[in-house]
Image (tube, rainbow, N blue to C red; front, top):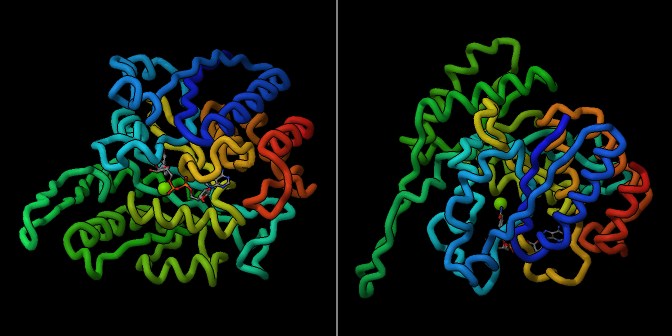
Length: 349
Ligand code: NAI
Ligand code: MG
């Protein structure tokens, strides 16, 4: 097998951790006998500073021809974070119909959760964040006006098609796990959009009578992530709620830097994109101390998506051997550098 992989470091720590992900992928390809044709693209906020856009013209067309995209994160303090679809991320997720944002929350070997007594048996679930619509469609306007006449709107958008497909994905995934779906919502105040969301999800739930289903409000869910993480198996939620909840998921795993993700186009009509859940971390960029595990784990999820399950499992095992050995960056309570953690993963692989 030969896979065409597009690599986009993005900005900040992306330049430090994405190359580690690529090294691990190359080691896995040598060991498991598949080939990778890797092409790097310099897109992101740094690219915007030079060229006035986050990616080259025609780049989406070019990216379309790849089997998958390995991505770091986009964003620089000097570049306005409110530019429409600035994040490159949003553009790719939407244009390539990557409507599933798959975000495992799983305590790695040897890691003490900040939740104290909670163990690996307790912290093992997955956040499925709707990734194409909802609160993040960027449909609105701001009128700065003169005080007190300013106003701003962001109208979220939920479609039946959009809700049904993410719901079916979640219930099918639950069947491969512990058969439980928790719909995290806020329909008690978002009485139009999220009431519709609940209703359509309820209809889909009825088609999976073997899967335990319940609805939970986001405020209660945040408390339960901390107090009762063992309750969760598949957490199905909206774009914004999932964005927030998955950082909390990263935190209970011991660091935001551990969290992996896949932006999936389950139909495979477009490439899927794999990135850590965190951003470009400008506060630590350039210091060689960023945690590369979320990135490397995302590369493993990419291989799983491409059908290289054995290689994916081997990478995840090497990550766990590394954390069990206490080879950790400072965010996770260790003293090791980005490179030392990646070297350890390579050694175990
Ligand atoms: P962030 O996730 O970059 O950082 C939050 C905190 O976590 C920081 O203290 C950072 O040092 C730490 N952190 C994050 N990843 C880490 C790692 N691998 N190892 C060790 N520590 C880590 O979020 P922030 O600061 O809110 O955003 C920074 C920039 O990233 C912004 O421009 C934002 O828009 C962008 N961003 C981009 C995303 C994407 O491209 N998918 C996602 C989230 C944010
Ligand atoms: Mg986020």
